[in-house]
Length: 242
Image (cartoon, rainbow, N blue to C red; front, side):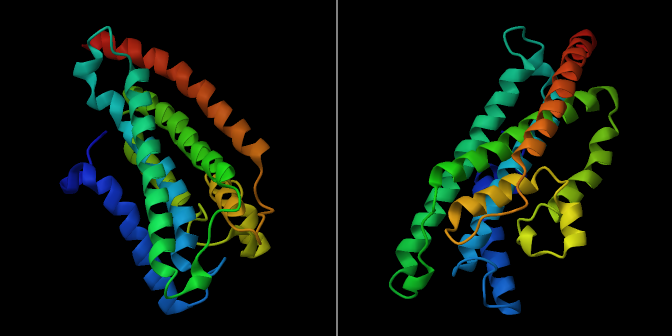
């Protein structure tokens, strides 16, 4: 996978786990009652893992084309090979984090706070939500990576969009509980839909009214069509330059 900072590969495990624990403690100090369910950590687990599945896939693929020019010079290796590797690795890591954290939380907490032991209502729908986020990160990463070949400044410009997706993703709050005006803005963020779907699949007492799979997949398909069209031209340009 792409660079992970000073922590290396271990960073992809540590970062989301630290975020889950840190945000749980901070939110608990502000209000001990979780927005959903009885466990603050499980609430953040379902938002953070889905978000990071998108975020890591998109960020790694966005940087992969320009950072792997030497590798792409070999005809047997295509950009899609690199993209697929990033996607599969991220999915594997995030699913591992999800299961290890969920099982560990319920195992250690059951003796002290048995009411905080929660198992997913529909684990297959949770998987589907995580897959949705990963695929969205995949197609958006291909789009960004290809566009950056022609416009190197695009990577820095997109960081503004990335921050907006972070703030309005719904990973730290329940979209249905937001004021109507704010909710109408947040639902335009495609990333919000898999996060809300994951929580709907996890909690038996919650079914989000904000999830719109039609909007999500239509948006993702449009980005994919444009992104892969750009990728063909970007590949030719990189081949010519090398």
